[in-house]
Length: 277
Image (tube, rainbow, N blue to C red):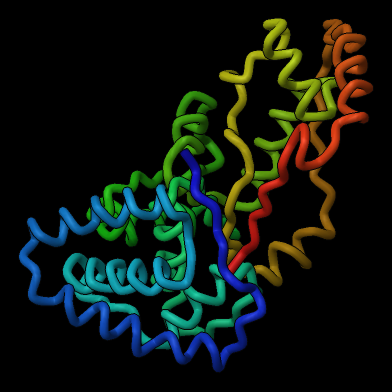
């Protein structure tokens, strides 16, 4: 079961600042708890997030919980600037954090909240060293929250990559993520739509289990200007010899798509929208 993020993306910086006292008030209630009581609260909070999704109240309580875990495990409780940065990330916004303000710790707020709600998370960095370092540094927080985290690095074999991408939170570089995505696309060959992929899988012509990624759900991009602008200028091309014929019979799929053209919203299907905070 995967929860959805239902947070108003139009909240201004002023509106976010008004949430800080509520986070601190919730955090004050956590400080006197013994370790066993805190662990039980973590378990209850994960169940609650899976059931209700991510909303303003849940983010307030979860940020306070993650902050308390960071205080106990790393002696590094999140500061207000980091709490604001975490809420901005939950909104899906570009967030500028100055050097020394702790962006690595800031990312744990959004990453852990989404992961606790059952949403797979990618934290995308610019090199293997940062991927591995950040994952290891923040490991105590994620472990205490009951989340598993892995890092994907260049020399990692496919079996380990698949396991790493299956973690609750995966730290990786943009290049590794893109190339693994291209490798998965290559396995699809001429299958270009989700419906075609599903049909091919039912026909045992496409081994979904052989794919490295389990989908792209929620990503936090570190050094976004470098990843999305500078490195985006360099084309990433995956090439290999392939003499096999992977064409599949899509007549059944096309017939099904033709039938669905007559479906009416509200009568034959409903649309559930997911809006970023």
